[in-house]
Image (cartoon, rainbow, N blue to C red; front, side, top):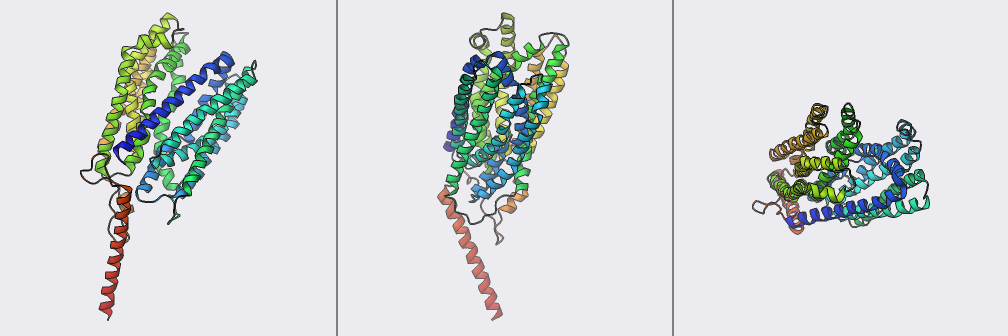
Length: 494
């Protein structure tokens, strides 16, 4: 892939993600006005279980499948059977997730003390299944360096969710339970439309594929590649779910404002430091197929370029958060009491550095996925999160630190993860044996690795025409060798 293509893909995903988040944020303003505090509470209470099930059914699938498709595509193989196998595998997981959410709906409603949540869970449950399909299709297109379907499907989701969500809430005005349930059903409708769009886009592209070999990548290979990616992607969301229990319980031992402090920390400070990571998400998406089809030496160069680009985007954001924290709070959180506003300013400044380190962790995790070393990403995140829990237990339990201790623990977590991931990325060894074996030709020679020629630059490489010419020449050379060997055998017999 050329450097221009990489930058274009990264920019498209970043702009698309920014627009999608902007649409989502704008949608919540009229939604909150229509359903009120109680309705929004029901709406939000259904999401934690939904996010946990999504984590186990679809987290990391786009990145994992993107690597597989990019590797096969770089070898001249565009095989829809790989997508069919991935769909069968991950739709099964998605179906299990949907079934679990439906079965747990009455239990969760009773545990959370709200009978209206039963309908909320049922309205949202099909989304788990649909998101699994969406993840597979996005991974396929991203593996072929085509991020447009991903961007358009994200915008489509937000548009459908906003339009139908507000329409349903207007229809059920005065009934906050039905409003919350129908707004969550609008989420399911948005995922259905997005999955339908991606399926039609995939079918249209599949018609142009000429298949010489209908054997795709096996389900076992897909699962083996996806599992460490899914684990790496799941660790952070699951740790945040655990934080919602741990932090509140620790602070409740010395203050009645534990929930308020937790809300300021997660809903205020962490929401802001996550924004630069959203902008840099395009780099993480675009780098996976770039590294998958590259030689070992080129992989490190390209990973460094991706990291420098991430730093160029995230460091100014971190500086803005630190320097202008007071003005940000004054504009976005003007309704907060004075004491809470001052605490939020301190939290934003304390966590500002994490805006950069979290963005880099995201990019480096994607680099390891593209290199086929996702298990080291999962290991790094597991170590970092374990350290974060230990620090939270020690610092937050002390009223002198309180919620600021959680901010310190978060900074340490992302900083440790950054250095671990950076070390694994730069110490990547030569290509694995199975990749060498896969590149071995039937006559005993080896195909050229799909990376750039020496001196072609970090994002250099052959054009599609020269790649095709190389493969044709390799087949001709092999045929000529076979004919010469056959001729020698005939002469010896005669």
